[in-house]
Length: 399
Image (cartoon, rainbow, N blue to C red; front, top):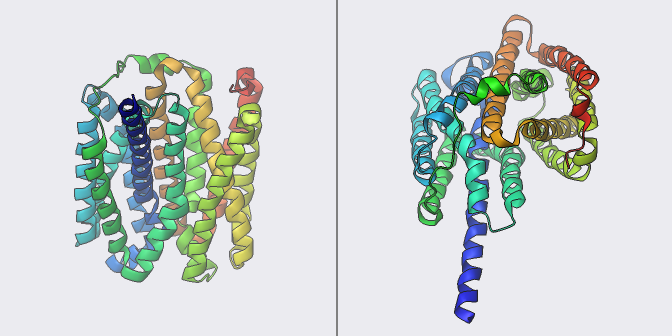
């Protein structure tokens, strides 16, 4: 009897560790997506190109994830999940090795393609894996661990990546991510159980989902919000350094605050998201719009930028979680597909934002990125007001 209890306790501890491992995997995946934002100036200087040209790293990555998330999810839908996870991590690690030794900017872009393809498959399967390895009755915990890993990528991953880049060069940042990914790969190989695919969807479900006008509007809103955000945020590091003459350490501090604010947004949602979901979405969009509008006036003051970073970061996380919750409610039988499209559209917005921001930097000025982002945020706000008026079900409680 005692032996059975010990075995059960050991098994449960292993399951908790497997969930934690998936959270660390999410942290790594999101860190490598976001970290170029903090290294744009260094990479541009190394390859003797402009920051706007370097911004193509963000656009290419995001658009590959956007275009390939759904096709790759369906293409690999019958694959055993542990092997698929290990295979994508192998590509992820090899691509980071190529980033470290990239002898030209084009080679760096090629390495980012490999990472983006890994990212596209990872986010199509990771939530289902986390839920399956979680201890009984701990599915919500598994999903919150993944969300925390994603948040920590902005809180710790981006500023830490920037600090490593400052001290040892930007290549060391990508090398560090590759080494951590290798450790995670070894732990995944040793600890994860065999997980046969349980996916039963097909492309035929997509037209049915897209006949839902509220879902289409939600996806359009997601696209606009992320396009607006990344138009300004993609160039926030050179904006602070060149327009505001902010020191390197102060710029790192502002990026850290932005990430910390994401955790605050997550806490606010867990407290009031069930009851006031739509209201939180509306307030968050207004806060994002206001933050981008006053960005240029605040750029010379670290204190003013700190306040903006806290408000903007909180608003963005609230919007992500609120919109995700709304999308998942549309059809509980097709949540994998809904989330795959959700992830794809977010990345479409990231790519479009980086492109618009780059265009503004090149053809207007670096100081204009806040205003260009704000103009797109106005369209997002108008769409949200339209949705609140036309879809009463949008305001239903989540619980």
